[in-house]
Length: 220
Image 1 (cartoon, one colour):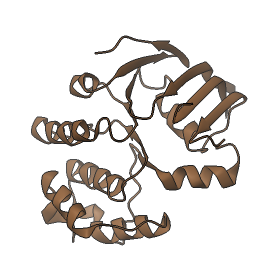
Image 2 (cartoon, one colour):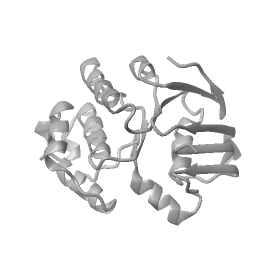
Image 3 (cartoon, one colour):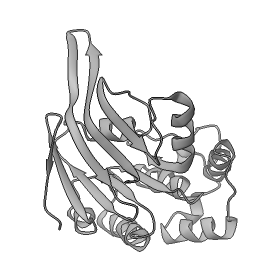
């Protein structure tokens, strides 16, 4: 049994012009130590897969299992979200709190403890140690992206779901993020959506999605 399992999953969104199938019969699994990269054009269904894993969208047809649970059940979805770390493209930090306060609030809401020394060391590694006492709206786009990643990594998640983790980053900081994730490879299962070739290179497997249809690719 994989950490994540999709079996013939269809997801439909309702729009003002009618229903749109975002996923069309998607089937795949994620191994316990596997790093998987999802590739595809914008609107192809990559983010929908991540949201289905967390129970933020529910299948019209098919089955999603995560840690052996079914996130279409709200109670089980909450447990999946507590155990998984999800980096969104939009960001989730509360603007009234500092970055460090956001990290503490995040861990508290997930009933997790923090190793403050390790978190601050990782912040330095990501070149954002100096911004922990600032508010999100005081940060550049690249700093905010790395602060969001720090928050997601801070409480040692059992599964990483990363939506375009190097977007908005310059080459140097993107390289640092790739190095950090590469060090975690083999210890934490992860699914990453990205077009960054460096992230593709650290993957164990690549899946391509086009128009909601999943196409299994080759290893890097």
